[in-house]
Length: 253
Image (tube, rainbow, N blue to C red):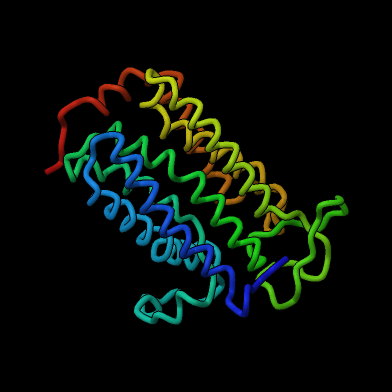
C-alpha cells in the first residue's frame, strides 16, 4: 500500500482529483443535455458542500465518540483530522432539488449526476485505500492487505479485506451498467434511481465485512435498505410518475 508519492500524501491528491473530475464530467454530460457550463460549477459546489462539510458533520454525529460542538466547524484544522462519512446523504437530495431551483432540465441534470458519480466514487475509494480508512475485517485470502500502524486502518499489521478496492471495483461495474443503460433512450430518465439502488445494494453487502459490523444492521445499512426500497418503488411501480416529474414545468423559483 502506497501512502505517499515523492513525499506527498496520496489521500489529498486523490481527493483533489475527484474535484477536477466532478467539474470535467459535469461539464461534459450537462453540455450533452444543453445545460450551461455554469451549472457544472453548481454541481461542484454541491459536491464540496456534501463531501467536505456535511460528511464531517455526519461523521461527528454517527461515528465519532467526541462530544458534540458546533464550534469545531469554524476550525479548519478539524477538517484535516480525518473522519468523513455519508456525503451522498447530503449530495443526492441537494442534487435532486438543484434543477427545480435553477430551472434546468431535470432529466439532463439527473443523467449527468448519475453518470459522473461512479467514477468519482471509485477514485475516492482509492484515496481511502492509500490512507487505510474504510478497510475490512481480518481474512486469509490471497488478496488480503496489511496496513501499517501509521495508517488510519482500524486493524493494522494483519491481513484484512481491502474493502476500498471492492467498493472501487463495484463503482466501476456500476459505471459500465449505467453507460450501457444510457444507450437506451427510453431508460435514460431512470439512471439516477438505478444508480441509487445498485450503489446502495453494493454498499449494504460490503458493510458486512467492516470491523464495525457487530451482527446487526448498521445505521448505514438501514439507510441503504431505505434507498434500495425507494429505487425499486420508482423502477417497478413509479416509472410513469417519475417521467412526469422530470418532464413537468414545475419549478420552485
